[in-house]
Length: 263
Image (cartoon, rainbow, N blue to C red; front, side, top):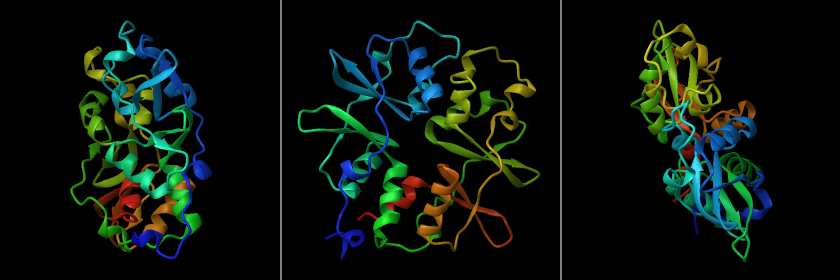
């Protein structure tokens, strides 16, 4: 039995999945998908053909799209369809989500119909609700110590490639963390695939104009439950980790925290 579940009754996916699915056809244009992500704040969209799910499209996928390109179809950009079942254990479903590098994963019924999306926030709420026992205790046990950052005055053209690999980056000014720039920030402002656009830096295109502030940080000595509380309270996806002097020593994501409850 997994340590996180020892002595605990497990929750099923259907009990915690909270996000309504959004669908798009294979032959729809990517600009439509981006509009859905911006307008409805979706992390993952289900791609369908003849009303059957055939793929997924994520925010990271949309970073490859030029903000002015309008004739690119979804079919060439979507990834393989993967899902979890309504009756599955939440932590087992979370493992599939992490392995697939997703922040939302489709939930299907016995007939294969997508009924909900399981979000990483749903998993964190389930962990908090059930008070599962983590396999490690502290943030420093699961954080990434080599942190990719960006400067406050960099143009978005310099960081878009990083955001294909990282969901967010701490923004630094005078050696201090002043904010976070995320995929969501970039896509909502319409600067996905900025390197294909006019390559003239401007203050409007700078990170400082697009980033989210203030930067919420956490101590490396904090518990995983402390991190969960911050993720849920501020509805954020990454937390810069600082030492007692406020120096940046790492970064932790929701996926890192969830991984701390899996074996």
